[in-house]
Amino acid sequence: MASDITRRHLLATLPAGLALASLPGTAGALTVGQARALVDQVVGEVNGVINSGKSESAMLRSFEAIFVRHADVRYIAQSALGPAGRRASKAQMSAYIKAFQGYMARKYGRRFREFIGGRIEVTDARPLKSFYEVRTVAHLRGQAPFRVDWHVFDKSGRERFFNIIIEGVNMLAAERTEIGAMLDRRGGDIGALTADLTRAG
Image 1 (cartoon, rainbow, N blue to C red):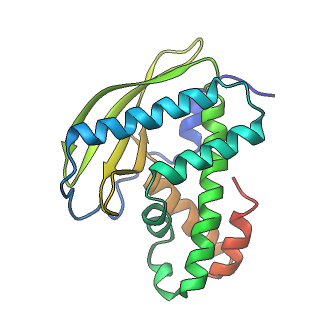
Image 2 (cartoon, rainbow, N blue to C red; image 1 turned 180 degrees about the vertical axis):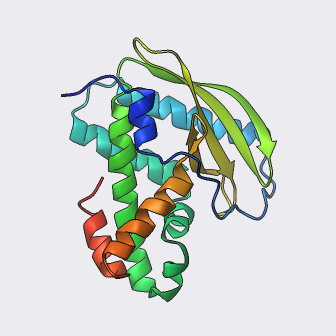
């Protein structure tokens, strides 16, 4: 049964205490204003979807489109896979990234779907190490507002977000742990992991 999302529900999907993994080397020519503008656009699109009245399947397709447009999918997928990616063929990596993209859209799209009736708003942006952090606040029905941070860089040549931090809990590091565990359970078989990711999330 659907219910309003809670901090506990969010944090249950993201193991606590994880640090940033595989940080990008440089922020390039990206500016604070560009980073904030990217997240403003993402948040606007997410808010539009969660309050659109669409069916769950339609919303998840919309979230996947947002993810593809505004996230550095390749970087996130490769970071989640970790060193195992070095032994993958080009075809294996391409298939894995495509499966990972759908998996992430379904997994986190369902979380965002539970924001129905609420909103996310951008509050601040600042340079942080070799990337930019854009702070947002999630306002949900019947709950105290809570912080959601977005990490943005231009490693691919265009500004993209590569991580989301929910009340200090790191999505990128959490997914690296989760994907690593899934791969271990499949004996390191990237093909088997890819097949299972198409059904997971």
